[in-house]
Structure formats: C-alpha cells, structure tokens
Length: 256
Image (tube, rainbow, N blue to C red):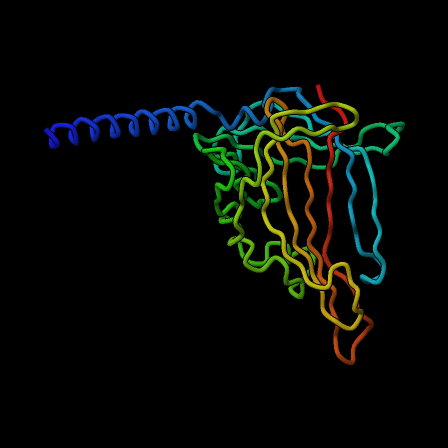
C-alpha cells in the first residue's frame, strides 16, 4: 500500500513540475523582443542628449546638450547581409528652434532570440530571451579589444576587454515618467558599473569610470541610456593630469 501511495504522490508531483515548467517555457516563448522596440518605418523617438567631452587636451570637462531624434527607416540589409532596420539620427538645439541636422545612423537587427545593434562597425547584443531579472549574457562579445582606440588612442585603457562585459537584466516591469509622460513595462539592462577615484577627489591618484545602462519600454523602445567611460591619467614628470574618454546620457522627451 505504501508503495502504491508513494507512486501516486510521485506521479502527482512530477506532473505538477512538468506543467509548471511548461507554463514558464510558454511565458518565455510568447514574449517577443520586438515588443520592446517599435520597428516601423517612420516611427521616431526624440531624446534630451547630454554629451560629456574633454577639451583643452583633457584639462577641462564640458557637457554639450541637444535634442536628438532617432527615426526608423525601411527594412534593409545590414553589413552582414541580414534583414535589418536602419535608424537615422538628427540633432538640433535643446529649445527645438533650429532645423534638424543629420547626425549619422546605425542598424537594429532583430533575430529569433536576440536584438543586435551595429554602429560604426561595432556590433553588440542589446536584448536577449528570456527577458527576466538577473538573466546575463556577453553583450559585447563581437567587439575587438580596444574598440575606441581609433578615436581616443591606445593610452585609453577603459575599453580593454569590453568583450567580456556581463549584460544583465537588472529589473523588469518598472514605471517611470519622461517629460511628464508616464511610461510602464520598462526593463533595465546594466552593462558595467566600475570606478575608482571618480569623481576625482584625489588629484594625485589615477581614476576611471565605466558605467553603462539602457532602459527599454514595451511598445516604445529605448527610453533612457547612460554611457560613461573616462580615465584620469597622470604621467610622472610629464604634463599635468588630464582626462580622456566620453559620456552620453539620453532621456526620452517625445515619440510618435
């Protein structure tokens, strides 16, 4: 009798486990990554863009602000021959009084389980399935070592080993307000968060910061982005300390 009861309870537990796994699998499979984008020709998002640059040979930090519009072009083919959407960028003043000026483009490629972005021939994996908290992947695994060397020089060390960054779904289902507009179903992807002596409090000590995160809203796309990489460098017996690198912050202000 005990053996029969054990067999019965084992079957019930096994059936419950299988049903539970099937339901979770079904939930993950029904969610589409394109739900977190709006890849239709003519759709756009306008951002407040704050760009941090270092001038006077890195001795002075400035923040330049703009309005930036990202507009979805028609479905085309990326440089790997895959169906992709080209996204055009435009800039104008923060007050929105000047005409839009072209400011480059990039590609969004939607695959079965990933969303990739290619810009300046640098390819990254921005989203993956399943979309769940703490899911992690190597989002920069297609990047070469020192990808920003052509712009910032070989002495810029922050971008060494970027291919090993762990992208992580830090949170899901968030709600935020952008320019007075409530936005729901937001996911946050943290790419990197490391620093030393940043902000610089000890002028005689090397410092750096690598910080990167994206926020995507379901049915909208990218609503917030913060991307900061700089080094505070000291050369013994050389010129005064200086910074090299960049910072970018985007926050949605409008969309169609």
